[in-house]
Image: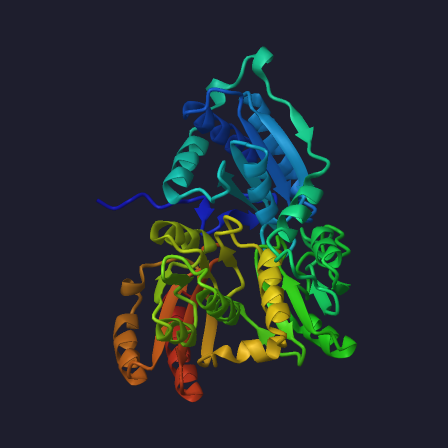
Amino acid sequence: MEHRRKSLFGTDGIRGVANRHPMTPEMSLKLGKALTYLLKRGVITHKPKIVIGKDTRLSGYIFEQALSSGIAAMGADVLLVGPLPTPAIAFITQSMRADAGIVISASHNPYEDNGIKIFDRHGFKLPDEEEMRLEEMIENGGGEHLVATPDDIGKAHRIEDAPGRYVVFAKNSFPGDLTLEGIRIVLDCANGAAYKVAPTILEELGADVITIGVHPDGRNINTECGSLKPELLRLKVLETGADLGIALDGDADRVIFSDERGEIVDGDKIIAICADEMIKSGKLRGNAVVTTLMSNMALENFIRSKGIDFFRTEVGDRYVVEAMRAKGCNLGGEQSGHIIFLDHTTTGDGTLAALQVLAIMKREGRKLSELSRIIDLYPQLLLNVKIRKKKELSKIKGLAELLDRNEARLKGKGRINIRYSGTEPISRVMVEGEDVSLINEIASELADAIRKDIGAAA
C-alpha cells in the first residue's frame, strides 16, 4: 500500500513564501492548535508549555502571533524567546522542561521566505509520522471544535534571559582548560538569528572577533553573506590577516569556514577533522559516522580507512540525527555545514561546531589550513534544474538508461545522486569522480534529460 505523502512538511519543516500558501497566518494558527491538541492527547497531565523562537525575518512577527494565538486558544502557555538560533530553541525547550519548541525560520533561504520547524520536549525534530498527524489535523481545521474554555485559555510569557542561557550552554561545550586568546576570527552571522549570541560566545572565550552580518533589518538575512555565500568572509579573512573565518546561516544551525589563506572548508572536511580527533581521543561512539547522500566519497574513504563504519541518510540533518540515535553514534552531519555532536546537543549547531574545531586548533597548535588537508575532496558538481512537477525518477523519459550508462563510465570511482529539493521546485543532480571533464559531461546529460521531461518554462 502506498503511503500518503506529506503535503505541508518538507525535509526541514514547513517552508514557503511568507503570506502565500502554505506559509500563512491562518495555517500557523491551525498548526498551533493542532500541536497543542496532540500534546494534550498524549501523556501530559499538566498545562502544556511551548517555546517559540524565530530568526530576523520581517515576517516572523506574523507567525509568532498566529502560533501563539492558536496555542493559547487550545489551553497551553507560550514561552517567547525572540530571535535566537534554531539549536538555541532546541536547548531552551529541554532546559525549560517545555513540551515542544517551535522555530520560525527559513534557514538559508532569502528573506521573502519563512518556515516553521518543531522540536519535541527532548529537543529533537519531529519524525515524519508526527508531521503527518499534524497535517491531517490542519486539513481538518486544526482542532477548531476543541478549543479551551475561557478559564483554561493559555498565556504568553517572554523569556528575557534566553540569549544568556544559550551563551552559557554553548561555552560549556568548549574545553574548560582552553581559551581563544590570541585567535583572530572573522565571524559572519548572515544578518540572522545568531547576530548577538555568536559574537558574545567567541568574545567571552577570549577571541578577537571581527563581525560581518550583525545588523539585521528584517530584509537582509542571507543577502550576499552567510554560509551559502562565503566570498565576503573569505575576502575579510585575507584583508584582516585573521586566523580563520566562520560563516553561519540565517538560523545558525550550519557553519562553513575559511582558513587563513581564504580557502573554504566545508562540512565534509569539518566532519573529517572532528572524527579524526574523536577517534584519537577515544570519544567517538558507535564506531560510526553518519552523513547524507551528498557527502563526498573522499570523506567516506577516509572514515572507512580508520576502521570506522560510514552511513549515509537522505538529505536533512533530521535524518542524520535519527540514524545517529538508532546506531548509538555521537558524530554526524552534512556537507552543507550541519554538524551534530550528540554529546552536546540534539541538532545541527553552527556555533557549537565552530567551537569544536577551534578547540582542536588550540589543542594541537595547528592552523585550519593544516587541519583541512586531512582529506582531498573528489571533484563534485551539483546542478539545480527548475521543474514544474515532481515525477518519480524512474518515470522520467530516458533517465534510467542514462544513469546505467554513466554509472558504468565512472568505473566505481565516483557517484551519481539525483534528488528533489524538500523546500523548492528543484531537482538536484550531483556527480562526483576523479575526472572533472567526465563529471561535467555526465551531469549535463542527466540535467538535460530532466529538463526536457519536467523542466519549468524559463
